[in-house]
Image (cartoon, rainbow, N blue to C red; front, side, top):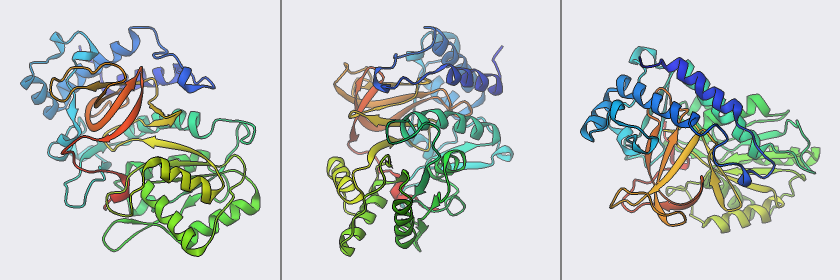
Length: 370
């Protein structure tokens, strides 16, 4: 008998609770559970999603992959993220859907859609909290244990961009971890794209410097470029308080000049007083996020990754480029296995992000539309 979504969601929460975060995250064990725990949940989830997600069942049948014949998580069919533009990969009935997250590609592109209800959003939030805490709130000599820092999101308010998974994530972060003065400073332009709220951002940065307390500045690469360009035009720099951190999510999509990541980070360090910079990788079709440390991204332990040769569909050797496949167990009510259009080099369960594959649709939160 196939287990219910709620039962499997609780099993994923159990995996989340059993995960631990050593001080050096890159030295963490590849899989912190008993060898069969993760795979057992993955296979049970595949059987449930095959039964309850009609579009996924059609895809699996076309590939000759059915629950009774699939013995390993490596055999579970993955859905290309582009397919979320055309089909509804969800087990949630239309009348039960309370939220839908859209991808953030070009305005001419039909967005991907990831449907949610109260239970799936609760699991999404349970997934994001520990990994965000591990990377963005890790204590050190300048960032005390238990500190509730001022969190400054450069994005628009959640009410104005209800289909943004990034902004929903930042809303949860601010509500759960943000100290006094936390909030959103961006707004939505007349064409539906995100714009930097310069005056509100400058005021928040000035206040943080006056208070001499660490601040988290959270935003897309595109918004950071506009902030840095505005500071240069005004002949201004900030020296953010010791312990301050920046979370940069990538993404330009023609909304600003595009900088190589190293150049962007150097400019942030120069103009904001050398805060710690922690890049984030996520997408609307996922329920978990990866963060970068030491030049490599890492998802939490309830997510596994592979890199595939686009011509053969076989795994590329470790350290060689391939298309990134992500298996996110927190995607209980949609599909867990996703093929992205991103190129990466895998090193165990960490990876270097190399960019978009040829012919892939551009995407990124900087081009989010309503």
